[in-house]
Each structure stands twice: as C-alpha cells, then as structure tokens.
Amino acid sequence: MKNIKKFVIACICDMMIFGLLSIANAAAVTDAGFRGRIVLQADGHGELWYVNRAGDKRYPVKNLSVLVAIASTVNSHDLASSVFLKKNLGKVLVENGNRSRIWYVNPSDGQSYYYNGSTESLRFISKLAVGATSASLAKIPVDCGATGSFDLSCLVAAAQTCTPASNINTLTVDFFGTKPTTVTLYKIEGIKNGACVFYKKLISGSVVLPAGNPQSVIDKANQSYKLFVGKDGRCRFTTTELTDTLLRWSHGQFDSNDEPHTKCSGQFYNVSTVPSS
Image (tube, rainbow, N blue to C red; front, side):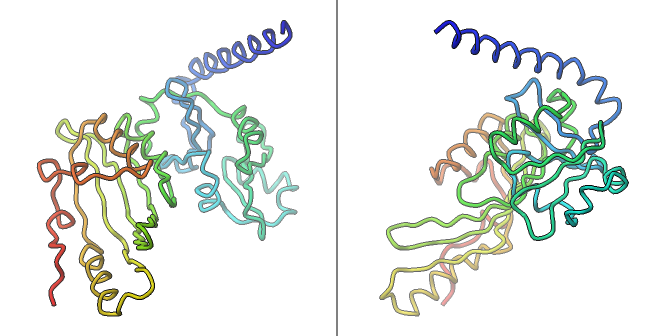
C-alpha cells in the first residue's frame, strides 16, 4: 500500500511539474512561434495540438486520422536520413503503404518520433510538447479534419473559448431501419458582435429505407434531403450554449430547439421540407 501511495504521489508531482514548466515556457515559445510544434494547452484541459509549419492551423493530436490526412508521404529509408529530417523539421510524415502511424520530426533535436494513436505513444509524444496559454493559441484556427459518427470532441473543445474551428462530419443514424446519412461542414467563426457564430452547410444527404418500400417513396425521401444539400446558415450563441449543444449532439441527442430561428438564419433554415411534386 505504501508503494502504491508513493507511486500515485510521484505521478501527481510529475504532472504538476510538467504543467508548471509548460506554462513557464509558454511566453518564450510564443515569441519564437508555434510553427511545426506539438503544443500543450497548459491552462486548458490538457489538449495537445500540432501546429503546422505555416503556423496558420492547428490539429488535435489525439485524432490520428487528421494527422495522417495532412502528413507528407515518404519512403521508410528517408526516415533514416539525417539530411532529409533536417529539411523536414516540424513536419508530420507518413510512410508509403503504412498509414497506421505518423512520424513527427521534432525541431528541437532533429529526430523523428512515431505516433500510432495508442495511449503509450501519446504519452511519449506529449513529452516533446511546448507549453502554451489558451489566449496565445486562440489566434490559430483549429482544423478538426473529417470525423465520423458523433465525434465532435474537437469542436466541443474549440467552442469553450469560441476559437475558430472547422470540421466535416459524416453521420449515419439508424431509426428503426431507416438510415439517413449526412455529410456536414461545421465551422466556429469566432466572436462577432458579442456572440459566438456557428456555421453549417450540408454537403450531401441521402436515406436508405427498410426493404419493401416502393421506389416512389424512396425517391421522395431522398428528394427531401436534396433540398438541403448546398444550403448553409449561421447561428449566434453564447460559448456555453454552443458547447452544450455540441456536447448533446456528440451523444446523439438532437432537438429542434437546438437551432431556433431567433438565433439562426440562412438558406438552410428557410428550406421547405415538403418537396414539390
């Protein structure tokens, strides 16, 4: 029991020291820029970000698929070349034919470090992070990439401070055999005139009905979805309202009151749901 207590205390101390060092280093790193860095949001909830070399976007490290999508493809022998790595400091790389992990070239030591999304590799790569405050990171938009199902965790994190963020979400829901699928672009556009502006646009939409439905019914159902395709709109929320709404959506809880006409406007919210015959 004493050994367990010592271990727990040691872990807590390590986390406190790492957090304090990260905050202390935040100002210095801000001056130098976050470009090509793994960054720990030290005064947040421990969010870990990768900031691209241009310094104009940041990506959630925990979402491996997002990093794979932006990674440059290389051959395995390139990763063993110090000359090659020196030319690619701060980049995220993926091996040709192996998209199950990425390699991050650390600008501090010129070495490449792999990350495959596991808890162990996340803990290891977090040790390479520099600290940052939420205020300094707020200037860098978040690219949440493409996600599926109810994965809106990246948007939820951005909504807490209304940090500009974007996400393309593909969602399929099974309503007793009726399966609608939508692909939607979501954006948090930041604070404007005292409100957090939330943008959405339906990229595509379709529905699969249970077997036995006549083709005319299937066509009419899909026509209803097509009415919304390409339409967009904006809602004005407080940060708390937007965060709570996205949290409910991430748990599959949708309500018509989530986007009231008193807060939302645009083509998406003005479409008649009754298709013309």
